[in-house]
Amino acid sequence: MRVLLVEDDEALRDTLSQALRQAGHGVDQVADGRAADNALVTGTYDLAVLDLGLPHVDGIEVLRRMRERQDRTPVLVLSARDGIDERVLGLRAGADDYLTKPFALRELEARVDALIRRAAGGLARLVHGPLEVDLAERTATVDGKPLDLTAREMAILEALMKRAGQVVIKTRLAQQIGDWASEVGSNTIEVYIHRLRKKLKPCGVGIRTIHGLGYLLETPGVD
Ligand code: CA
Figure 1 (cartoon, protein in one colour):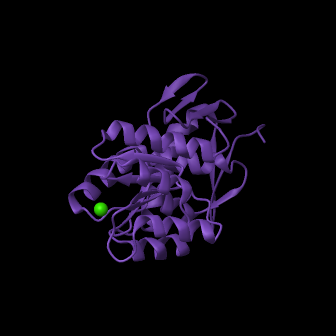
Figure 2 (cartoon, rainbow, N blue to C red; figure 1 turned 180 degrees about the horizontal axis):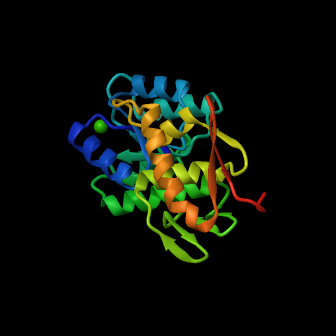
Figure 3 (cartoon, rainbow, N blue to C red; figure 1 turned 90 degrees about the vertical axis):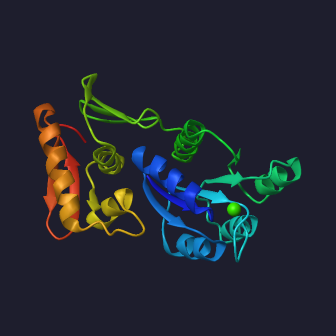
């Protein structure tokens, strides 16, 4: 999943982005409200993690503008201030959930997973032939046996399974695992696809390359 992380405290931003990446998300990170606004207008995200106290444009205003332009990306608000007024303000402005600092990383991860799941219409599992991905647990199984995947391989497999039988363009896959700063080259995607193919081959699931475009998950006999 692709997450926009908006936090002006550099140390916290690094910690959070690392935790989200380890959980297999692609993370873009920005440090102020104006940059957040720009990123949200130009990019597509599965979730925004939004601090409220931000330079230039504060978090509540970023949120209001999102909802005004009908951007329904789920938003998890972070705030150092735990006053009930601010919590109400955040929720009224369109936040989906709220975390008061300090919080445990495990709690952040659990809320992120819950929001992404809720946005997917309560979808908890993706199934394709013998292959099953549990979105909440972030695990994959083949005929019930666990498949050993890295977080990035899992992110790519999720993206392919969500559109099984259809082409997923390469840049979309790069975004799933990409960082704001370091560009994910198309060769990187090829490496991950190559590894995934090797792991999926024994269960009869294939990844077809559509040259110049992207990839397609296919299994003979499965729609
Ligand atoms: Ca702040």
